Image 1: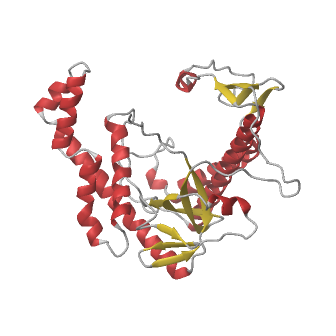
Image 2 (image 1 turned 30 degrees about the vertical axis):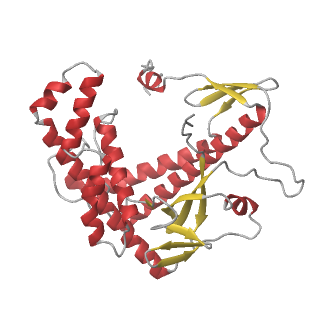
Image 3 (image 1 turned 60 degrees about the vertical axis):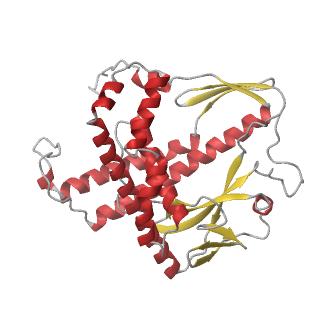
Length: 361
């Protein structure tokens, strides 16, 4: 009797790193190296795919109806032209050897896999184009196992000569319970919080997350209820129906208070951008497409842009927090949850009647 392989459940535990200035400098350098490796892999994939598109056999197969035989022939062509994940692992080897002091082989392979996943969406998915990573745009690096490369041992991040302690509070019961599970792999994440760069270590752990317990009462904070729960999700609201509750709730209500501040900063950015770059705009206010001169960013513009980035970060965190609270409440209603299928693309494409009021708005 053969046993079928089942995919094990996983969850992520995020811990803050206590980095010193020289350690942060090394991490910044490694993030930049990772960005360049990613762009090199993505550029090579685009080059190989363009070469494949000139192949007569490929053009002939692309026009044929879908079938198993056609797919097998296409996969063979992809393999011949080196358009697959493992071909990119071979491509990244010499680059990793050049940067072996900073980037290990497993991390380099994961970077190549990220480039392949982006290209896969372009070839087989619905993506229309792929984007290269701009400067300071690579905000995470991860390994493949916890035995080599980026790893977590004895409350420290260990990676190619770096040993950075992780902040774990003694009374954080949830973290201590989670660390008893097996660590699959680690990920280093860089975030800008209140204008400063902070580094975090994300541990992908095997199993299910431990239950949070109320310290005062000793009870489980978010127990799983019994019964059926129906959910109808809209663009801004969600309708929830259970045996004891029927509610219509607004999605992420705490975000609405920040939208006005966001619009004010966006208008301020636009005014500063136009004042600093009059040569980049036409008389009617549109951007000159044929103007290749560099944009001029003033100190006040950069300050306003950082304020907007911080505001958007807060909005994302508040939205995530609201969604998690709502999910915990839904789980407490019942164990059998049914969600109505919703075609959000159809809702976006739905035309709305535009009405003009007496003031011309």
